[in-house]
Length: 89
Image (cartoon, rainbow, N blue to C red; front, side, top):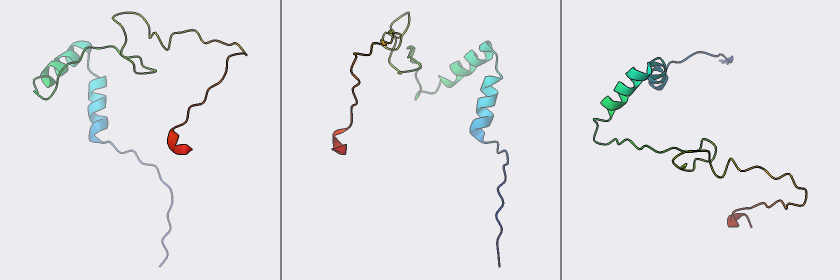
């Protein structure tokens, strides 16, 4: 008996995808209501902090990330430093 496998692509709708699509289709008001409803769960808390989307550091009250927004130096004299974990040596 021979079995032949052929590659195929099929769309699978998961529960996570359904929930994500529902949230993306909500208006700002509906989304706010949904968040407030979910916060009635005592295991959840609302943490209001801003994080840099690049380095994930907590951002100050206003402005850009102090690390990622620094101008990049293009000087040729600047050394390049590579850091490796100690386990690799």
